[in-house]
Length: 112
Image (cartoon, rainbow, N blue to C red; front, side, top):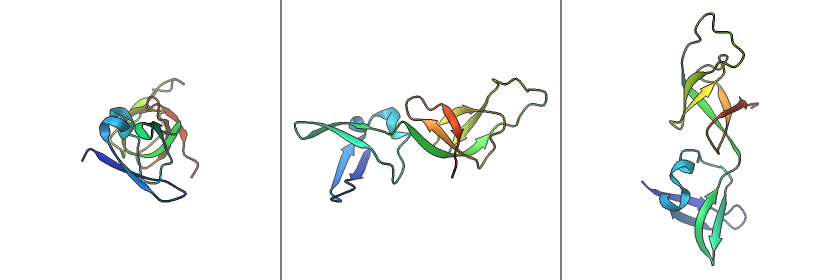
């Protein structure tokens, strides 16, 4: 439940870390296949560094309010990792988006 297993991409060695080391906020952004850097001090893991961006699917997005055309208007959405974020009005359920792993903010629509 609160243990996470990582695998070295070159020698396939596995390491299991407690969620305290991974970080409460960073756990929300982890997904299978993500490349991370495990920070160590004297051979002991002390933290996990995530890439600056991650791609997730929108599983729930509010409908656009008719007449709400302001360029800076955003609407709430829920991602497949359970995270809530604000997205532009054109983003709908099922859309894959890129978010910042620093603060969970919307960056762009995924290009995949």
